[in-house]
Length: 137
Image (cartoon, rainbow, N blue to C red; front, top):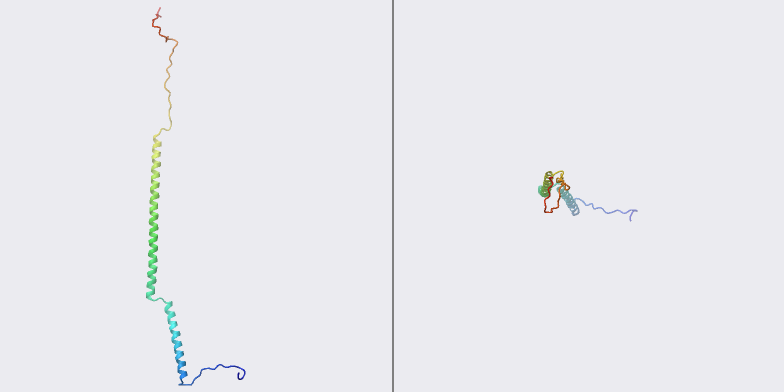
């Protein structure tokens, strides 16, 4: 150490030397690389027409698939609804038929007994002896 501190050597070359040309080439290359990176970053952030059309195609396909699924679910709901309506109509027909049968039945029953004929057995003799008796005397 000279003078109490350490000094890194700097590259300072004179005009027209070989070191100056290499230094300028390195700076030029560095600026070209940084501009190329900036251009690539800008290109990546903004979508190209091909990228947007591909994205539109993907989202369009997803939309069509979702619409097909919705249509399938709606068709299944309609089929189930029609089946339930048929069952309800069948049950309603059975209820109507039961009401019609119930309306034809009598609401109450009348029980009548056959008339009773009273026969006076004390005035007539029911024993037959084979002889006639004259009761006119």
